[in-house]
Length: 108
Ligand code: FES
Image (cartoon, rainbow, N blue to C red; front, side, top):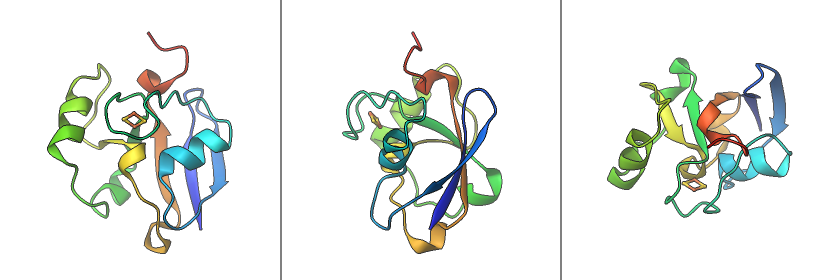
């Protein structure tokens, strides 16, 4: 499966994803600009992405913890998610995500 990730500079990257992996892990391991400070423990919000509206409704609903963390970011959108909480599977082949500015390694 593949995911399409637009980075903070607007460049689109087609990344090979693996069933059962977190989207954050794929984005990080391909070297894109994502901080993912807590390593996927859902405690930092530095893996924040905007999900393409066509895909947003196909993802499982966010937990309250995830929603609270998204709310703490300054660049949230209606389709914001934390990419460490998106578990990839074949039904998500072609998933489109955009890295939020707040997920950048040098974000404040
Ligand atoms: S990596 Fe920290 S919340 Fe996703």
